[in-house]
Image 1: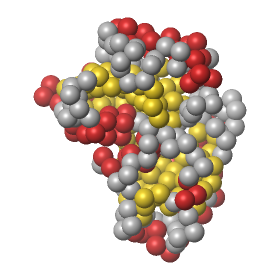
Image 2: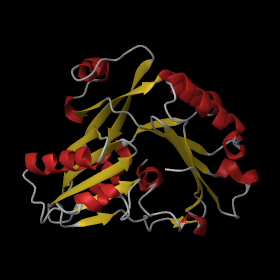
Image 3: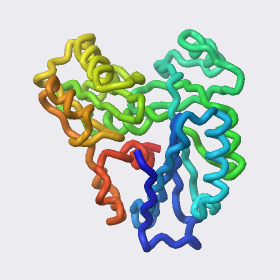
Length: 284
């Protein structure tokens, strides 16, 4: 996705201490939005794509420079939240979780390598914790600018908000796919129960369709009945959508949460593009 820079004319740089800043960091891109809690309105959204084939050090440099040089990121905010995309994570039911054992839980699935550290998010509505790996350099870049920043895994908004929205909807399965360039997250819930959350890498539409249909098969979901909701970098013009709609009957795109207001400058964007980033405001 190309760079985006959309700002409502009512944004007042002198009032940032009353605003909430949310930053989203992926492997090759970063975004941020600004929320005015007084009016309950999102008033800015920025998106920056990192140089193609950038190394980890190149990414860290671009992130650091972006924060240093972007006027709105050089301010003090009421709260700063960071939505971090990590493919190394594991869920543990809260009744079984022991904070002193978090590395053992994580190491059951992944190796924690040099330059990574573990963070833990509680998923309130699933009675579960998410243990995920975060690049220490990225964390330090953020904390140098925002000492009280709070970090969240990308699973938190989509899981929490979906479980709240559909908790009384007849205990039927719902599938959500949050699409990014080269990877996507897939969530399946049943009423107020978390059934599955996982991340997949893809290089083409065939990979994309295969992983989704394989989950439908593994969970014994009926492709004629079980609704699929898209979030992220996908719309009806996308090749990914064109192919998957041949197999899944009911497909919708996530809409903007009507709890909040949004700058008119956002309205040319597909409503689902940043819905997970916006959703962080509601669930924490």
